[in-house]
Length: 227
Image (cartoon, rainbow, N blue to C red; front, side):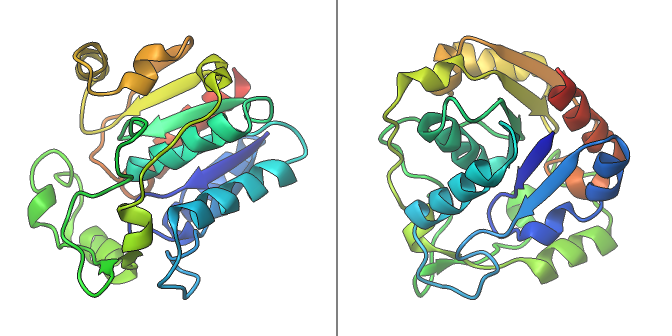
């Protein structure tokens, strides 16, 4: 199966480099995406541009793919399910939940000169980054690409209720499946509260398992694709 891999804020397609070989060895075709404004040289990209890039990859797949979103890009993966409910086989969400309709995409940090730069590691101290050594932190930070404000501040809109029929796997890195279920029950993820087929799986990692636990993450995604 084609497995589309969408990294969160500041990440290019290279963030998945260590996940690709084990996914291929397990019989799948991983497709890491470099999004407009996150590695293609554009500083004026919009959320619509990023959605269009994801949909182009969905449409190019030989069969309905597994669409994987990490962190903020969980919303991109869910927007793909909304736009192509008959073409997305399943959505996997790593370390995040889709934004609700009417919310901004990822207005978490202050932008500067029209972009959102990587804010350093201080906001992520604790469970998010506890499993990253200095070498891994340096590698992520040095490869981080400032994200255009036209992406982060865009308002998310959904249009097709058939998205709720698309199966969802919530991969829980810095939080547990129990905590994810509680967050959904408390209204923190209304899109998932309405989804009809949601499963949860734990992975013993921080927020960037593609860096700290690539083989384990590949196994989870391969199992999701097989299902």
